[in-house]
Amino acid sequence: MKNLLKHARSLQQKKFRDLHGSFLVQGQKVVKEALRSDLHVEDVLCTAEAAERMDFKEYTAVPAHELERVGTLESGNEVIAIVRKPSATPVLDLGPDELVIALDGIGDPGNLGTVLRIADWFGIQRVWCNLGGVDAYNPKCVQASMGALFRVRVDQLDLPEMLDRQHRSGATLYFASMEGTSAFEMRLAKRGVLVLGSESHGLSAEVRRLPGELIGIPGRGGAESLNVAMAASALCMEFTRQRSA
Amino acid sequence: MKNLLKHARSLQQKKFRDLHGSFLVQGQKVVKEALRSDLHVEDVLCTAEAAERMDFKEYTAVPAHELERVGTLESGNEVIAIVRKPSATPVLDLGPDELVIALDGIGDPGNLGTVLRIADWFGIQRVWCNLGGVDAYNPKCVQASMGALFRVRVDQLDLPEMLDRQHRSGATLYFASMEGTSAFEMRLAKRGVLVLGSESHGLSAEVRRLPGELIGIPGRGGAESLNVAMAASALCMEFTRQRSA
Image (cartoon, rainbow over all chains, first blue to last red; front, side):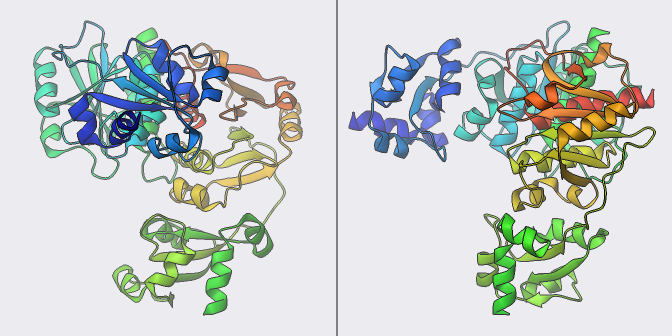
């Protein structure tokens, strides 16, 4: 038990998530999503009360005060699952009508989780992140995704190279930009990658160098910019409209 | 000085914001927005270094360790403004082509701030909140709005009554709903109120009773719902498209 708790606690850190290939899922709602998903749930740690309430058959009973030390939530650390990361498989080229979201240097795990939730809602099955960005299995991202992480595939990869490859294969690259053409005035390709830059630095020089179309969200107000999740939501809405039209 | 710091610190709490009619604005970026806005900035408390860097003419120099006690940010509490709330004026009926966002029981100040930022981006000038909801002058909301609070007018009011009044005056009420008709299939009125429910409870019974049209965001994925800010962003996108078409 002591070793199990130590193992679980270690997964708060990226280096141990990488080492063990597992991550933490916390809270009743998201743990239930994990159990329903295709991912392998290695263990569920929870209080006996929570297990009864949630009708868990297999779990490890852990006293509440021990769970507090494993969990990262401000409150409600009574159910924590240890979940196996999906196995790494080669990243395939875009399917015939596939739209992928690419995040070029996203820095905030909460924002990444929110983008996953948006992708999931709009039926986008893959999100690509540039190397060196935030870890999708960071507890804050897992929680913000509300289970979307279990359905949307996230790959960390050399984004400029991957985008270049997709462009060569005939996909259209869309770079979200304050200076972009209004999405309403564009005829959006069905096979494409929507690339969003980081909150603070926008798109990297390596990505900007690629042949992409600058796509904008028409705004009339005074806001300097939308954050990456709000921009993703607005642009996915228009992609969805044009795809269903 | 001691009284000023005590006064500033008290504004972390709603009852003192209500009592004094002022609120806190923190951080270089958002304080600059406040100074540029129409609101009355009562005082700027900052370190001498920050004042020089930001080229402030009028400010009260406060040592960094004292500012830490006034500010609520995790880091960067080196510039804090005390700003007068806009004076309460009667809430007017919708203008001829006006779209207003109404939040029916929003509970999270960060979400409210994000919705203000979205409203600001899309040129929506007013946001209505139901009585008893979160305070727009909560520091978390102020910061999440990134200055949008200084441009978008927020009123806390009896929402069911106000919506009823707008409906009687010929405006269309749109209730964001998982079960709503796809926004793409609706011909959206130019004069309307987009009503979004709370993250956890959706629309209140009093609002649902009103004659509104259920509007939905077409999704194909597995996400159970979008949060209020993501939904606002997606729906504002479609309202904007139809208004500009």
